[in-house]
Length: 115
Image 1 (cartoon, one colour):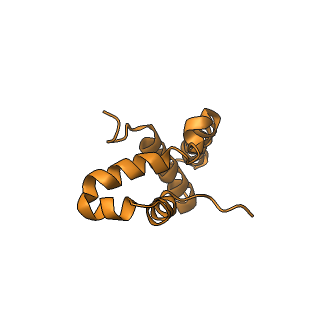
Image 2 (cartoon, rainbow, N blue to C red):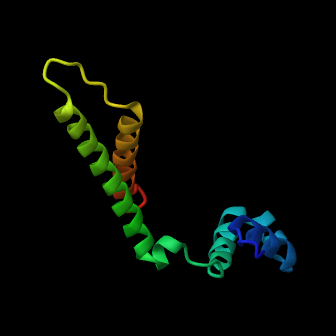
């Protein structure tokens, strides 16, 4: 099984295996670490969300379907209940709908990094 490269591991390997970098880190840690981090992250694979937009679309579609089914299920249960009787919507239905709507809000809201 291939191990997924981690940026922290690559950074440590680069610093320890490249001659003279440790001395540069000791002399000017902030500038050197930023420069080395840019160099190391060039070699890392691009995240799947950036490369394959269909993954994002499928997740949003699936969460939307779950939210709609939960809402329609609650409406259907309340419509089928005879008038005057108390209705008890299952907790699972409420939890699924709330979780799907919350996940959609988290996915569709702009991230703080992108302004």
